Length: 222
Image 1: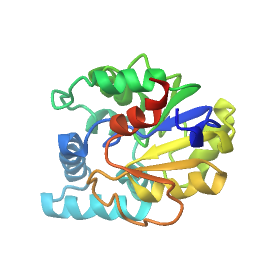
Image 2: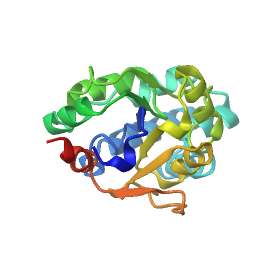
Image 3: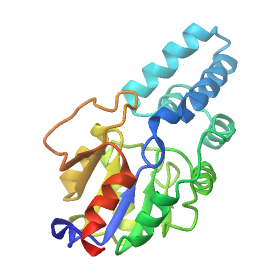
Image 4: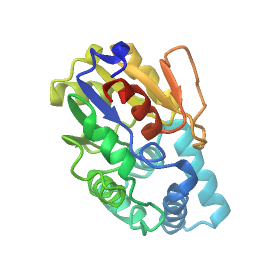
């Protein structure tokens, strides 16, 4: 493995648009269901629902966080509803499965979604047996990335030493809190909505595809 990463013990990955390509468009299906949920909740038209949805996303990090703050919705009900999507757009990625399987140390998923949905997606990719555990929005006390609270809970929950951990995320802003704790950071720059918002010097590595980069850093073992 690349000697610059020899100190890494824990590998932490975001899920959506990170472990599968943003071009898959899976999140657009979730977006549609969020819009429909807001229409029913507020009794508004699709245009207003879209405005409310994106306003919450931009201000709070997730639509859920804004709806909980302003409308006291049940997060379980919301997440079950918006994640009830088909996963036929996601295909098995054997190269990624092999690459993650070769990484030394522990592997975790850290997502602003929920664990039930995350497990469905991981199974579709073929990664359902590749991770030691998941840290989801429920585990973060509904305080989403990039709020520092969830990162601190992640490290506390699994005994992660941030200085020996690396975090992959398609949202550049989500890497700043990780870097402040001492983590190595990897920005998966693959075209996610607002993915380049807040780009800064807290990014250690900028890549396009997780699998390709992992194969590259592991190449010295071959």
